[in-house]
Image (cartoon, rainbow, N blue to C red; front, side):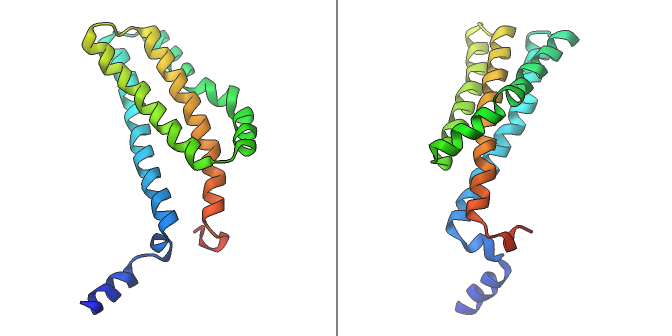
Length: 149
């Protein structure tokens, strides 16, 4: 049994043996899955349910990307002063999940509108900025430079 554990341990990269990095890596995987769902679900809801045209889809894309332009620098400064990057990242992911959950709930109640989808896209983009500015500095604090590759 110990030989099997040793063999398995030899196959697991050193970085994955560190508990903090494993938590970070797992959280990143869940977050990226949510990002991809958002990337597909909002435009599909706008087109298939709300029958959005090309101009409306352009506005939806703008609503999702505008927070990066507006808030990246202030969010970075705020996150650096505040600390607790991991907590900010978790709160941002939970906020994005709640915002995305509002879309099928509104659809189920028959109240889904294009302005709501715009607001959700903008708010999700804003929380993504908060997540991303914390992610870069958290990664650097968890991983030694020689382990980057």
